[in-house]
Amino acid sequence: MSDNTITVGELREHLNGLSDDTKISFAGGLSFYRFKLIADDEVFLEFNEPQAFLEPSFKKKNPNVKVAFIGIDDVAWDEDGITAEPVNVSVR
Image (tube, rainbow, N blue to C red; front, side, top):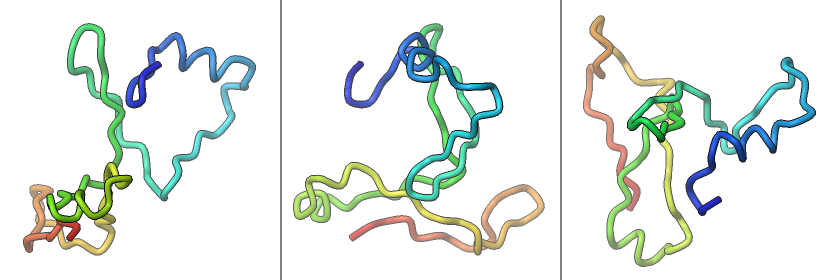
C-alpha cells in the first residue's frame, strides 16, 4: 500500500470480520459522496466537501498540510446545482 492508494484486496483485509451494518466514519467531518471509476483498475473515493486550493506560499510555510476541504452547507445553490455566488476555496 502506498501513501495515497490502497487496493480493494487490502481494503477487504482491513474490513475482514466486520459485520455488514458496521458504520464507517471519516475523520475531519467529511461525508462520503461516491466511488468514481477513473480507469479499469482504479477508482476515486470522493467526498461531498470540495477540496480547497492551497496557495504556493501556504504550502511552503505548511509543508505537512496535504489537503484542505471546504464546508459548503451555507452556500446558496440555484436549481441547476450551481452556486449562486462565487465561493472562495483558497487557503492562504
